[in-house]
Image (tube, rainbow, N blue to C red):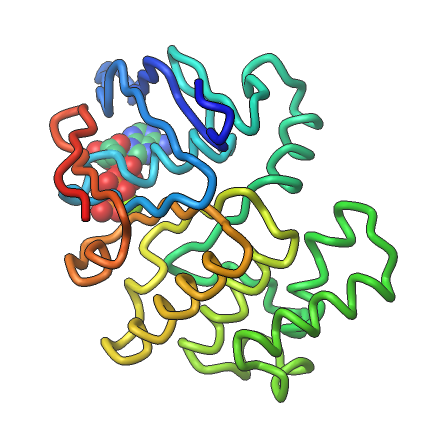
Length: 230
Ligand SMILES: Nc1ncnc2c1ncn2[C@@H]1O[C@H](COP(=O)(O)OP(=O)(O)OP(=O)(O)O)[C@@H](O)[C@H]1O
Ligand SMILES: [Mg+2]
């Protein structure tokens, strides 16, 4: 394992058992992400892209194999430790923003910092700064329902970035956006990556979005295949 490796998995196997049926998602999957590296994962619907991101982020467990985040083995940790590791080193962005509806944009972005035990004043300052950076300085008190789709996604990115994680896992972050808004959201990802050297693993169905990443992989028939690099 290289020392700039922020996230890696070794011989990862995942299946679901649904009654009598066993659904094999992938087998013996190896994958690693270096600091600041940007990676697109593509693949047909149902090929296991979201499942892979869930496993890499410790939101679901593999049947076999090992995941390392910042040099720590995920399956050797307690649930609480896994949560802390996630909070400290990873950020998540989803197709649907998953912001908490009853909280303002500012409160949503402060949340990961408060969970990480930062004091409220500092959390507020940092959340305000990153929301300004994503162009939402005038929307701090808006609840998610009072934001446009693109604004919500920018708030979700701010929430993922506010802890300055080593790696962001993004599952179709532009899947619900029109082309222009999607391009803006991608510009934002790239700018933040440059500023903070955040690695980015991004699942997308959009080749244009994938082409903005340094590496591209295709998840197909249970294997992850490198499909292109620029
Ligand atoms: N909790 C579950 N129980 C049983 N089967 C599941 C479960 N979650 C996912 N699957 C199955 O695993 C396979 C992979 O699902 P996954 O959501 O990872 O696909 P995906 O590549 O993200 O697809 P999409 O592009 O449509 O989002 C699918 O066949 C799905 O039906
Ligand atoms: Mg999916």
